[in-house]
Length: 228
Image 1 (cartoon, rainbow, N blue to C red):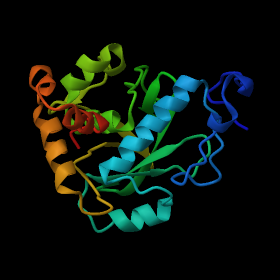
Image 2: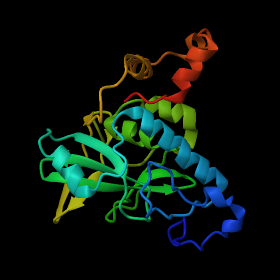
Image 3: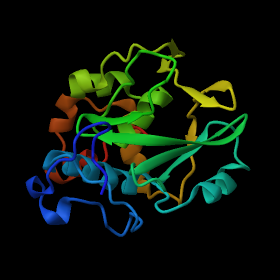
């Protein structure tokens, strides 16, 4: 089995319940054996998985070639989230660019989810407790909301910014292509309830107004708090 951290010594699996030492659910392919560094790490990944399943653009066990086939007819900036075929990682971001489809592994540590650090930069990439917050950050959506809720987790990345979003450079074939996330590729048509929830998240309901809602409606909104 592989260590949960990069360059760290393996965590004794006795500290993590046996059923939570790996992801082997119906939405992960059997070759995913990346251990969790702690029970908190396990909970973080599973919460993120649940929200991805609600998002409508999580494609599960789709391979790189199939992702490229799906995205090829779409305009640049179209993207999807899928299971990573690399057992060091849980998720991969596949995005259509002017140079074709590019696949970016989403790293997962107890400190959060983040994209591969730029080898030519000393800046540390921003980390988020949810994959959807990571996506929203690079789309330029809900940045202040993420920062207010998570504090340092969604704080200043130290990365260049353009049009309100952080610029992440994809290194490919000797080129550096700016990552542009504009529109997710949906697996199916979203329900009316989910579209309304997403619209409220995008516009911002406000804590005071949210407290005035019935508990069942508040719980429904809390289950998916992303603007995408």
